[in-house]
Length: 292
Image (cartoon, rainbow, N blue to C red; front, side, top):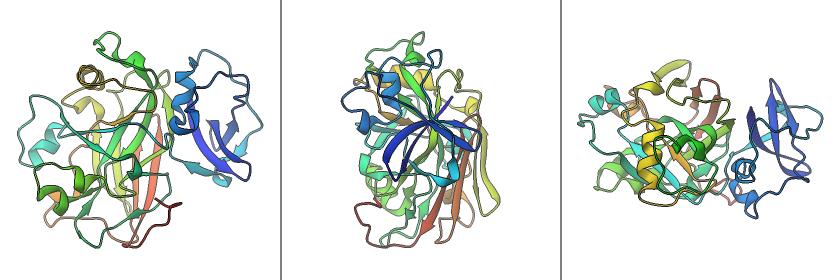
């Protein structure tokens, strides 16, 4: 099942995506957590719901008539994994890491599907990184390989947009990773029952009709389950936390000459059984609070 978060003239809602339509979910009879508006689609899993339980659904509405929103608007943690595909490590001239390379973005970097990626005046080298993204659905600590995936509400798509000059001029990557709009996610979440094995998915990034990244999540150095075990050994994972699991080869920084994002680009990141995340690229400008 695909669960979307969207806005219309009546407010913000959750809905089930069925083809080209969305059917709103009636959550009035569900015991959603108090932070449901903050954790978005993860609220259903946090309330104990799974695909095996029926939902009360409204009439279908064309998805094109709705404003799709980030599936999780304000995650407590935005955890990112670097260098998690062997060919990406090779193109970056980095040895495959013995442990997961973990960094973070601020939640203020989250951007809606369809929302603009805003370039920086301070850095002309802004890059794309399409990634399978995990949405945590249960509070979890000290997970094991056998139960790790049970903590997952589902999977969405992320773009770990990166300002390469800022990122690489210091040892810690976060400053180049976390500007506003640099973490588009969406367009919705595929439940964990829909994606039972996250290591069997195709992933691609297309800009202007050119496929720049194309891989399988089976090529990850550290699987989703491994990442969950590792991260939960360090900190408590909570509903709504998201984990960007790393990008495959084909980033613009490694091309000769480099292919950085340009104003007017449309970045399309597609993941099998989830969908396609599309975001336009716009030039540097001051953001209003509604755009960030």
